[in-house]
Amino acid sequence: MLLLSFEKEKKHLPENVLSIEEVINYLTKLNDNIMVYVTRIYIDSKCGAKIFEMSNGLSCRKNDDGKWIIV
Picture 1 (cartoon, helix red, strand yellow):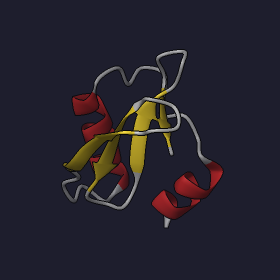
Picture 2 (cartoon, rainbow, N blue to C red; picture 1 turned 30 degrees about the vertical axis):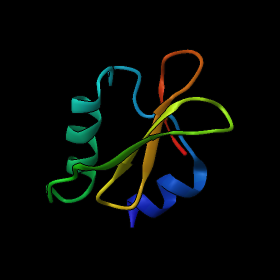
Picture 3 (cartoon, rainbow, N blue to C red; picture 1 turned 90 degrees about the vertical axis):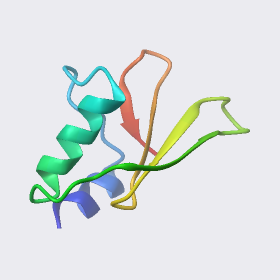
Picture 4 (cartoon, helix red, strand yellow; picture 1 turned 60 degrees about the horizontal axis):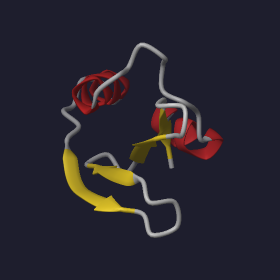
Protein backbone atom coordinates (compact mmCIF):
# COMPACT_ATOMS: atom_id res chain seq x y z
CA MET A 1 0.00 0.00 0.00
CA LEU A 2 1.28 3.47 -0.87
CA LEU A 3 0.67 4.87 2.62
CA LEU A 4 2.78 2.16 4.25
CA SER A 5 5.77 2.89 2.03
CA PHE A 6 5.19 6.59 2.59
CA GLU A 7 5.28 6.05 6.37
CA LYS A 8 8.43 3.89 6.27
CA GLU A 9 10.38 6.46 4.26
CA LYS A 10 9.24 9.39 6.47
CA LYS A 11 8.89 11.58 3.41
CA HIS A 12 7.96 15.19 3.30
CA LEU A 13 4.52 15.95 1.98
CA PRO A 14 4.52 17.95 -1.26
CA GLU A 15 5.82 21.49 -0.85
CA ASN A 16 2.52 23.03 -1.98
CA VAL A 17 0.74 21.51 1.06
CA LEU A 18 0.57 24.40 3.52
CA SER A 19 -2.31 23.73 5.93
CA ILE A 20 -3.77 20.77 7.80
CA GLU A 21 -6.79 20.93 5.49
CA GLU A 22 -4.48 20.44 2.50
CA VAL A 23 -2.74 17.56 4.32
CA ILE A 24 -6.15 15.93 4.83
CA ASN A 25 -7.05 16.37 1.15
CA TYR A 26 -3.70 14.98 0.00
CA LEU A 27 -3.86 11.95 2.31
CA THR A 28 -7.48 11.30 1.31
CA LYS A 29 -6.43 11.15 -2.36
CA LEU A 30 -3.63 8.71 -1.46
CA ASN A 31 -6.17 6.63 0.48
CA ASP A 32 -8.29 5.88 -2.63
CA ASN A 33 -10.54 8.85 -1.77
CA ILE A 34 -11.56 7.33 1.56
CA MET A 35 -11.83 10.32 3.88
CA VAL A 36 -8.86 10.86 6.20
CA TYR A 37 -9.41 13.05 9.24
CA VAL A 38 -7.60 14.17 12.39
CA THR A 39 -8.28 11.86 15.33
CA ARG A 40 -6.03 13.53 17.88
CA ILE A 41 -3.76 16.53 18.27
CA TYR A 42 -1.04 16.62 20.89
CA ILE A 43 2.30 18.28 21.62
CA ASP A 44 5.38 16.06 21.32
CA SER A 45 7.38 16.37 24.54
CA LYS A 46 10.67 15.71 22.70
CA CYS A 47 10.52 18.40 20.04
CA GLY A 48 7.62 20.56 21.25
CA ALA A 49 5.84 20.26 17.90
CA LYS A 50 2.10 19.88 17.41
CA ILE A 51 1.43 16.34 16.15
CA PHE A 52 -1.68 15.55 14.12
CA GLU A 53 -2.70 11.89 14.39
CA MET A 54 -4.74 10.87 11.36
CA SER A 55 -7.48 8.28 10.92
CA ASN A 56 -5.37 6.31 8.43
CA GLY A 57 -2.71 5.59 11.07
CA LEU A 58 -0.20 8.24 10.01
CA SER A 59 0.88 11.16 12.15
CA CYS A 60 2.26 14.39 10.74
CA ARG A 61 3.73 17.67 11.87
CA LYS A 62 5.52 20.68 10.50
CA ASN A 63 9.31 20.54 10.66
CA ASP A 64 11.59 23.46 11.53
CA ASP A 65 11.42 24.66 7.91
CA GLY A 66 7.61 24.81 8.00
CA LYS A 67 7.18 21.77 5.74
CA TRP A 68 4.79 18.96 6.62
CA ILE A 69 6.40 15.59 7.39
CA ILE A 70 5.15 12.16 8.39
CA VAL A 71 6.44 11.16 11.83
